[in-house]
Image (cartoon, rainbow, N blue to C red):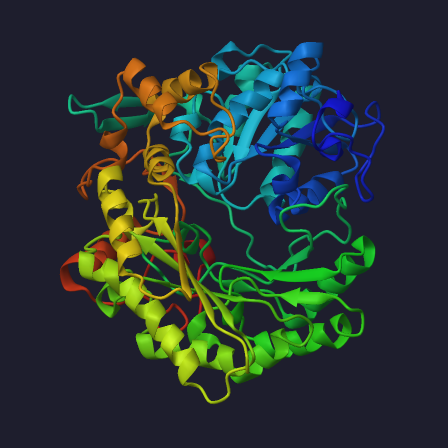
Length: 605
C-alpha cells in the first residue's frame, strides 16, 4: 500500500516526540482526528497542545489520525484496510472517544469520510454501546448544528481544561457502567459541552427557526469555556516532529489569545475574546524549549495580532538574543500595518528577509470604516514606506470582496491603493538599486459568520462576485501588481454551512455518499455535487447564504453563549450599515461587548 502512494510518510507514524503508552494500562483511549491531510494537521498548533495535555494524564492515551489522500483511499478500499491511529495502528472503532477539530466548514465531509474508513457508524443515532463517543471542537462549533446528526457531543470554546475534564468524566462513566444514553445526558452537565440529542428544534413555515427546547435538564444557553490565565495554561515542551515537510514546517508558540481590533467581519476576533497575552518571559521560555526539543530552524510567534502584544519589542529582543546565534529564523505572521515601526522592521529582518503581508481588507476609507478596520490610507502608506526603507521589495495585501455596503468604487479602490503603494516605492530615494517592487493582491469572498456583527448580512451571489472580480482585474494597470481571488463557488457553500441549521446534515451526508471528500481542496470540491445534494434534500443554499437576517430571527447558534451579546452585535451592525461609525479598539475604550460576564472585570483598566 505504501509503495503505491505519493507520500507514504503521511501514514507511517513513529515520529520523534510521538507518545506511546501501553493500551492495556490506560483507562481511556482518545483518537484525535484532523479532517485533512497529515501536512495540514501537523501544522496546527491547537492539535499539538491538546495532544500533549491529554497525554499528560496517566490514565489517558491520545493518538492521532489524519484523512488519507485520494491515492491512499484507493489502496485502503482495495485491501479493506481501516483508518488507524498513527501511534498504535488500531482502527478508530477500537477507541473510547473519536474527537475532531473543525477548523473549516468545508472539512465537514471529511469527518464522515474518516468515521466511515475507521468503522464508526456515521449517524449518532445508529451508534451502539460498543461504538466510540464522537466529539468535536474548534472554531466551527460556534454553530455546530449542521453536524448535529453525526457528533455525539460538541466542546464549545478552549479545550485545555475542558478536554481533560471530559476524559476524567468518561473514565468515571465507564467504571460505573453507564450506558451510552446516560453518559451523553450527564456529559451535558460539564460547562462547554453541547449534546445535540438533548434539544428539540421546531421551524416556521418560512423555514426559519420557531423554537429550541432543551430536554432532561440540558443547559440553555450552553456557555463556552475560556482559559483565564495564558501564562498558566499548559503548553508542550515537546511535540511530534513530522516525518515529511508540512505546510508550516516550524516551531510555533502562541503569544496571545483574542484581539482588540473588533473588525466586524472577523469571527475569530469575537469568539476568542477576551484579549489575553502571555508574559514575554513565558513566550521566550516556551519557544526555547520547543526549538531545543524539535530542532526546527524556524520559529513562528502566533496570534490574531502579534504586533498588539503589549511587550512586543522586549519580547523580540529576548527571542532574537538566542535565535540569531542559533541560526533560527523568526516569523511574525500576524503583523498590523498601523503598528509597523522602524524598530520592528529592524528586528524581524535580522535573520531572514522575505516578503511582508498586510491586510487593509478594503480599498476605500469609507468601506474600511464600515468594517471597523480602524486604519486610514496614510497609515497604510506609512507602513509600506517603513518596509521599503527597511529593504523589503515584496508586499502582499489581503482584501475582502462583497462586504456589506460595498460598491464598484470600493472594488476599483483596491487596485488604486495597490498602485499608490507601487508609486510610493519608486518615489523613495532610499529604494534598493536594481530591484523592482512586487505588490500582490489576494481577495477573499466575504462570508457572513456567526457571532460577528455581519452575521445578519447577505452574501453576494456567485454572479455578483464574478462581476466584481472581473472589475478588479480590469482596474489593475501595472505589471508590478498581481491579483488572485478565492473561488466564489466554494465561498457560497461555506456561507451556507456557516449559517446553517441541523437540517443540513442530510445535505452533507448526501454529498459524502455521492463521492464528496476533501471539499476544501480544488481536487475534491464540486459545486454541482453540492447543488444536487441540496436539491435532493429539498433545501436551498441561498436561504442560508444569500438572505439577510432580521435581528429578531432565531439563529441556529443563538443557543450558545460565546461571551459576546447579540445586542452588541446588533449595535455594531447598525453602526456599520446605517451610521458608518467606527468603534475604538478594546485597549482604548470598552464598548460593552458582554465578555465581562466571563471574566468579572474589564479587559483593560
